[in-house]
Length: 634
Image 1 (cartoon, rainbow, N blue to C red):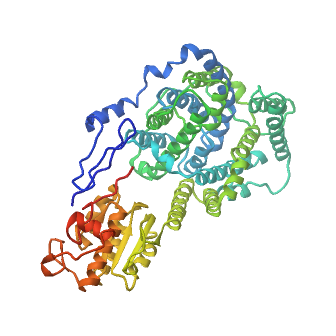
Image 2: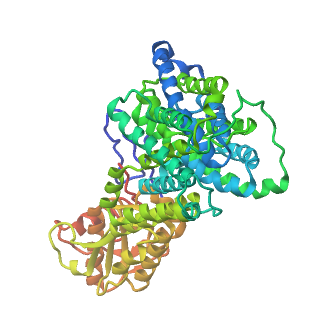
């Protein structure tokens, strides 16, 4: 078979002229450049490292970058403390992560404005790990998850986050928000956390049997923090409401001598880095949790950096380099006694809105937090846990966008179902399972939608009606001929009766998989066995290899029954019917040429008919105007 390659467009926008009645010669613009796999790999690896251009805008933006860094550092302080406490690793781990991981990710990451540190989503995954294996296991999890995320960047997996549908993202965000809120119930009530690993059950278990002073005091502080965080942005947006709320609540607790639990002692500076001891048995048991942490870190960081790219004009982002930077950040946090980190969308948004243009802003944020730890550790240690619980409860509520939820619910029932299922599984079982199941469900709904938009229609023949047209059936395949729709689409073609020629137009077929090709081959074989001649028009160039390998082409009575133009296929079919009605039968030779008896003499035809036109061009019945024609994709 003379397969034809895709026609290219010239630089002027004019397609090359291909010979319709002769061998097709591929046309290419210029000389193709070839990049060796080794050169491509080296270029990719170099692209994962920091470069001087990362700070190209610094001479013009350094003032705004430093100012934005101070603002983000102030906003990040209460969140880092709260997430550290909520994970079970302690406020110290949260601060260390914000400092160390925030600095490393800023330098090595793929975004100019991303801010990294402990996040609510990561706390949801880390809580059960700390409960089962202790806080000391976090160092091992950091090392294992960090390496996994780095390898994901090295092997170019950064683009995979784009396959996660929006309903899945919103559903898992809703689930995370619910879990974060429920995890704060014990601190908000001044009680002991429940023993269950499920956030809903643990929150119920933590409700005290009776009302006491500690419970009322904690609830009062939570209410005070929530009120300030809601009202202050409306009164004075320039002040960081969460920090102001923490300060006011802490002063109230000290001045009124409220019986509430506080953060406790913090180190006056960063601890020295240490290499954690790794027990092989413990490492094996932590492999699954570390993989979950790595997946979450990659997903959340890439989602955050993608949103940041739409908010800022500081340049595009490099997803693979972002993964490498986040992996290095988590590794470094593990050496200093921190916890796994990810890109934090809320802090990143504050950074962008504060005018950040380069990585200096995120680096400044890390140094601001380091200064707070070094100078004000004694003051920070007096912050009530109930105040931090109030900050996280408000943060959890703000994570859910009611407008986006309404949009998803109103869009379609399938998207609403995916959204609700992902959120429910996140709260009830596991975050990673929820994302996986959500993606699978979205894929199934997408396949169903593709199948519904695919079909086969019977069409009228081109031109004026001619005798014998009732013996010809022309079908058009539209959409996708794949495993989800092939049986239904091909059923109508296989059930034709009192037909001698079937024309199948494939130019409207955008997708062809192996299942569709196999079923198509079976239909052609069945029709040919019944004496029905099958002509195929418009087989797309990208489907040729699969169709040839599966047997679509070889199942045709003759290779020349592939056509590029519908006019030629119809004329060929009419000439076939004319000969069949005139001589009563047609016998095909082994080479696919047609012989109709009496030494292949041609009958006299109306010179104006389409059959006469094609016969005059090729001299026999079964030679199309464009033998072996493959429709070119424009």
